[in-house]
Length: 195
Image (cartoon, rainbow, N blue to C red; front, side):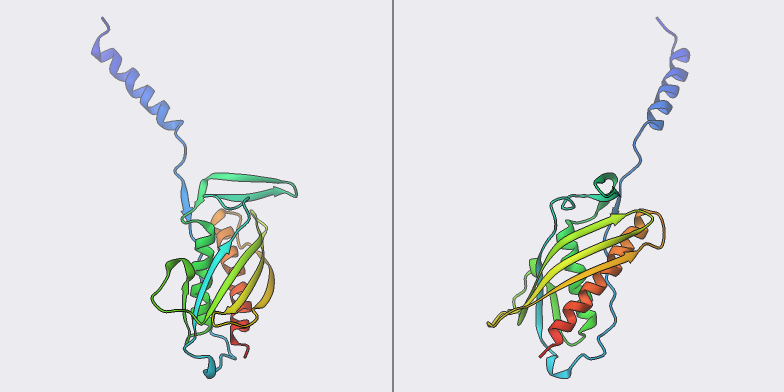
């Protein structure tokens, strides 16, 4: 029977080898919002209530993993860099936050959160493209509509935003997406400010 003193170093060595083979821990990312108030924000539009959503995203990026484009026809699902929340919900949250900042007198919330009050307007967003290229930039193409809940024709718009990354890592990529969504939010805010 082997001696305990001989087995102990072998066990420590085996544990160290297994630890070295372990996968790195996953990192989770959330989009952030920040938009300055619109200069042309009209006092007559103060107090409007706006629900943002639903937001649809392409099936290719509608997953926990951050999807990175590696060439014109190839993508990589990054198992260790993930979205902290479903992407469509996070986009709705950020655009709602941006609209609340752009239109300080308005009450704005993500549609999925619900509320006791009925909104005056609903903003629907269909993300056509959500492209992420490490060390280069991002592209967001969004079709959106601003609809008065009480009736009337919706105002439809399209935002196509390219934003360069400030670094080569995933954090810089997520920050670039946040800046691109700020521009989409400004486009929607301008439509909400239209009489």
